[in-house]
Every structure is written in structure tokens, then in C-alpha cells.
Length: 194
Image 1 (cartoon, rainbow, N blue to C red):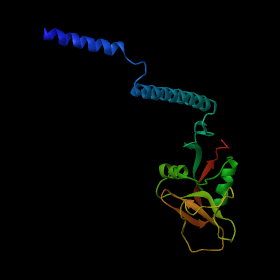
Image 2: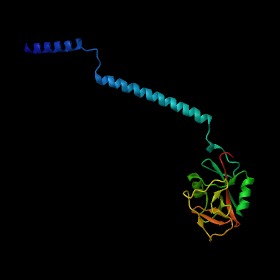
Image 3: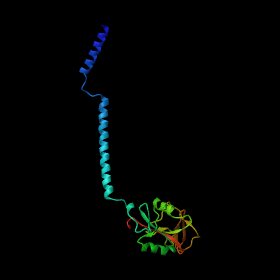
Image 4: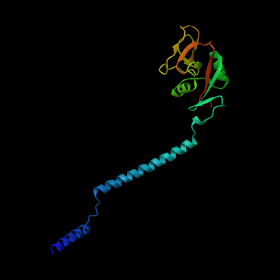
């Protein structure tokens, strides 16, 4: 009999617990619902951003995919370079680049430097678009922008003279030489010229 009473008491407790359950949600489930709503909202926002970015990218193709004028130009990270194997003075080299609707190479960033490392030999030197056009001793690029000495240093191959100096580059260094010397050269198309 005592077993029946315990059973009856348990039944009574269970029945009373179920019958009198409170309609107020437990605090943990309320927080879970809030977090779930925030998570779903963030997913929707991210999907909208991804869709908008994909539309933007497809309507504005990057310049890296623009082809170079012909197979003699080397495409590297969205820029086209012409490496000439003939030897001319700096002025003749500059004029050759102008005839190709380009300019002697202007080194602005790591992309330009990486082109040198990947495509030039250790021993060959090439004219680039850097010179000292007057006696004022300031290096200037062919596009009239100033040289930034923090980008790289220029070694002097001969003692300083009053004649115009021009820069040559190899895979490992840049040197200042007389512009009359005959070397190979590198032309570069800017992104607006392609």
C-alpha cells in the first residue's frame, strides 16, 4: 500500500506541475530567441552585401584583365612592360618608349619591383625613367614626379659630374650612370594608356 501512495503522490505532483505551468518563458529561451534573430539578421545582411559586391565587380572589371598591346609586352599584375634587348642611350630609349605610347619604367611600388625580380637577370642593366635633368642634383621621374629615396637607394657608379645622370636598374640594384651610355631599357604602360 505504501507503494501505491508514493505512486499516487508522484502522479499528483506531476499532474499539478503540468497543470499549473507558467505561460512566462524561461529567461534562457528568451535570450536564445534574441540571439537567433540577430544571427539571422546578420546572415541576411551579409548575403545582401555579397550580392551587391558581385554586381559591382561584374559591372566594373578590374584593369588587371586588360590585355597588353601585343605579345612582346609582358603583363605583370595589371601593368604592361616592354623589355628591349637592344642598347641605346637614355634619351634614345625614352624616345623609343614614347613611340610605343608608353614611358620609361617608373618604379612606384612593390608590383614594379616584383616585375624586376621575376623578369630580369642579375647581371643585365636597363634604363628606367629616372634622371637628374639639371644641375640641381634631384632625381626626377619621366612623369615629373619626385623620387622617393625611401623606396630604394641609387648607387653612384662613377664620381659625380656636371653632366646629366640617368638611372639603370638590374634585378639587385639601381645605379646612376651617364645618360650617354648605351644600355637596354624597360618601357611601361600606365593603366590609363592600356
